[in-house]
Image 1 (cartoon, rainbow, N blue to C red):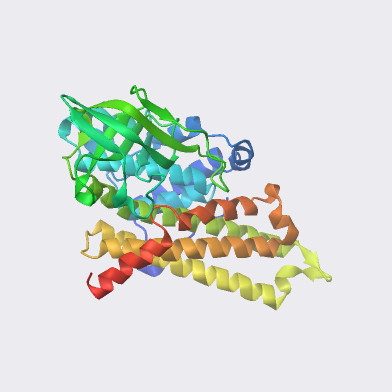
Image 2: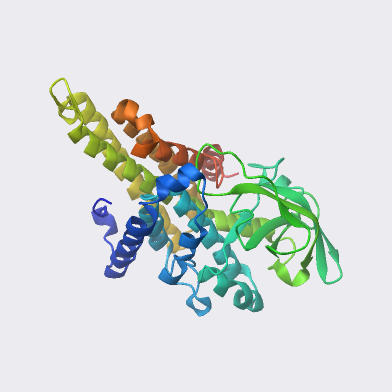
Length: 387
C-alpha cells in the first residue's frame, strides 16, 4: 500500500494516534489487500480474517476497557476505518457495524449485559449485526413493524429485517422492535443470539458491491427472546438506534475516504505508466487538472470528517448535525473520486483485475446506508430552521 496520508496541520496526530493508524494500515496491507479482489469475485465472507481484528483492539475501538474495549475516541476510529478501507471498503464497513453493536451494548446495556455480551464482541469471538431497516421502512425507520410481545420472562418477536450485513454469519443481532404504540416512542432494542429458536435468514442478496459481505433478511417467527436481553428499557430503542448512527455515519464516511484515496493512488500511478500519443497520459494538462481536483476534493472531505469526529468526541451539542454533514459530503466526494479514477483508467478501469471498478461498486452504497444522503440533508436543514 502507499505511504500513510498525513493529516492537515489542524489535525496533527498524537504519537498514539499515529501508532493506531500505522497498525491498521499494516494489517490491511498484509491481511486484506492481497485477498480483496478474490473475496469480491467469490463473494466470500472472510470471517476468519475479521476475527483477527479483535486481538488488535479493533473489535471495540470506542468501547470501555473494563469489558475488553480499546477506550479510544471517534477520531481514532475514523483513522482506523480510513486505513482498513484503503484495502477493502466492504471489510472496513463490516468492522464498523460490529463496533457500533458493541458500543450500543457498552453505552446503554446493564452491567450484566455488558459483562455477558461485550467481551466476546471486543475479542471478535462473536460478530455483531445491527437490525433496523425493514422491507417497508428504510428512511422512515420509526415506522418499523417488527413486533415484540411480552410473555412472562420472554418477548415473542415476529417480523422481518432487510439488508442486514452479516446476517447468518454474525453471532449477535441488535434488533429494533415495536413493543408499544406507533412512532419512535414505541420502539425497543432486543439482543438476539444466533441460535435462538425462531430466528432464520433469507437468501444472500445479489448486490452491486460489498460482495465480501453477506447481506440477507433477518426473519423472526415466534422468536422467544429472554426479557433480560432488552437493552435499556422499553421505548428507548429508537434513541439507541439513532445514537449508534451518529458514530456509524462517521465510520462509513471514513470507509469512503479510504476507498477513494486508494482509487486516487491507483489513478496517479496509472497516469505515470500509461502512454498515449507518445508520452505518459499524466503529462496532458486536462488529466493533470482532473487529478488536481480529485486531490483537492478528497483533502477537503478529510478535513471535514476529522472535524466532525472531533465534535462527537467533545460531545458538542451539534455533533449529530456535523455527523450528518460529514456523511453526506464525504460519501458523495468519495464516490465521485473513485468514478473519476475509473475514467482515468479508461477501458482498463472497467476490468476487475485493476481493482477500480470494485471501489466504484463498493462506495456507491455508502450514499444510501446509515441514512441516505437525502435524509442527511433533511437532518441538517431541520437544524437550521429549528424544526
